[in-house]
Amino acid sequence: MADMAETTLSCANCGKPAHLQCPKCMELKLPREGASFCTQDCFKASWSSHKSVHLKAKLNSPGAGNPQQQNSDSHGEGWLYCLKKGQARTQKMPYFDWTGMLRPYPISPKRIIPPHIDKPDWADDGIPKVEPNSDLQHVVEIKTPSQIQRMREACVIAREVLDAAARAIQPGVTTDEVDRVVHDATIAAGGYPSPLNYHFFPKSCCTSVNEVICHGIPDARKLEDGDIVNVDVTVYYNGVHADLNETYFVGNVDEESRRLVQCTYECLDKAISIVKPGVRFREIGEVINRHASMSGFSVVKSYCGHGIGELFHCAPNIPHYGRNKVVGVMKAGQTFTIEPMINAGVWRDRMWPDGWTAVTADGKRSAQFEHTLLVTETGVEVLTARLPTSPNVFPWLNS
Image 1 (tube, one colour):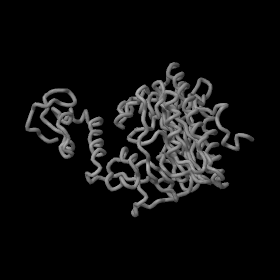
Image 2 (cartoon, one colour):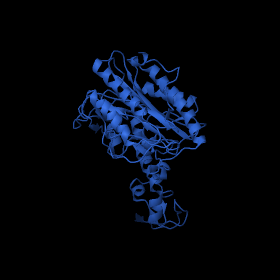
Image 3 (cartoon, rainbow, N blue to C red):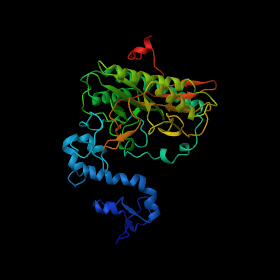
Image 4 (cartoon, rainbow, N blue to C red):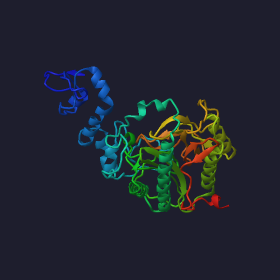
């Protein structure tokens, strides 16, 4: 922190006379109002929200010589919105070792949220505030009857939103168009698309094509005949989140990809079948690992299921691989996701320079399915279960 010559300004945190100014704000030549603090402690206390000022300033100054300047002509306005230091999204990166055939395409601008929609605390500045410091990161919450009822309602909406996305999947449709469908359906139902601006994620859902394991960013690439694509939807409605995803076939898909997607569906189904009070969370990974391995596939270890409710992500963590060390047992009233990611080749992953897109290390395909679950007194309730109106897109469900 740099000393200030004047003492007429007020601390942005507590309102007392300010003697210090944020050095980054000085570097960016931002106004002292809102960048002044009385002590180091006040500065530290404000940092999680204050640092967003720096990002906004950079985004408003594309000629300042930062990474967004060198990439702005190759990926569009949407990426400037979510770009953070050191991240990039462009095909013209000669030093990046792409693992498969997929490449990034331009991203459209951030979609609009109407003012009447109830928003989570990251919607405006990209920074979750309650979630990171909540006790529920360490303690698995037992939901109240009121919370459970709200989650049931949110999960039905999320299912209907994902079903709308499924109906849009076909060759020639861009993943950005799928994102538009998700966004519009969520807003129409009175919900907020939880991924939008969560840690600066620029879109309303994740679309993970072929070798992308998870967190693919919807963009201008058109889906091609033979692709597989996972669509991951989370809806924030009436104060709670509902999370699910499915992997879809695009046109005529090869037999190996069909086996991979069906195996992944079965992995989730078998894992759900053991959920009940008294079962250890670690058993989920054993069930999934056993079925995937027997089918000749591997289980991703870098990403796991999670608790969910009034927080998007919280305890418990749900690893999907075998011999995991997670502790704890299931109890009635707990809600969490199981979302196995199964790879056709090795289980290891790589991260694209955009900081979001996780891909298989060998470029082979990956599939994923996810449900939000409630542990009941006698077993499990699949809150995001398929509805009678859900599109008939999985051949194995007809047999």
